[in-house]
Image 1: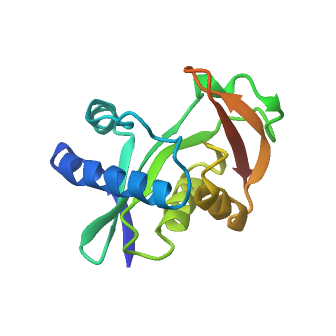
Image 2: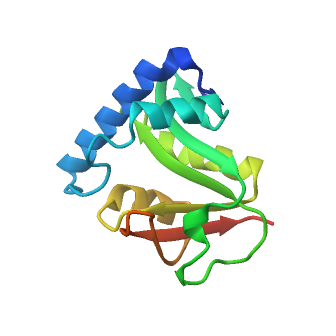
Length: 162
């Protein structure tokens, strides 16, 4: 059984382990350009915890995944080369990572977010085929390309259920 709860400061060491594992997995899958330079930093993850926007997925008694989720505008989503499905209030998911120990944990986390806000936007690097496959399985629509504040492009996805 899997459950989602807000992350706490005591979870921070485990979350950093999850991000390390996810970076290594990306590299093994050929994604050598996303989450470089120590991203996400301990400070960024801690800020998400402090803001109540960092979440964990607990399965089998251990934290198997983590992600950032909030409802409200994402500044980098204000401009898109393409078009979002709508302009309604939406939730945003960032930095989804798992240790690979639980099958389907990424889908579970994204579905949990969708149940809380029936309008979700996500972006990922074009090299992140694993995340793109998850989003495709969950029937997210690829809407175009957004540009991060550092100038790098990301494929933008959107799903709404209302």
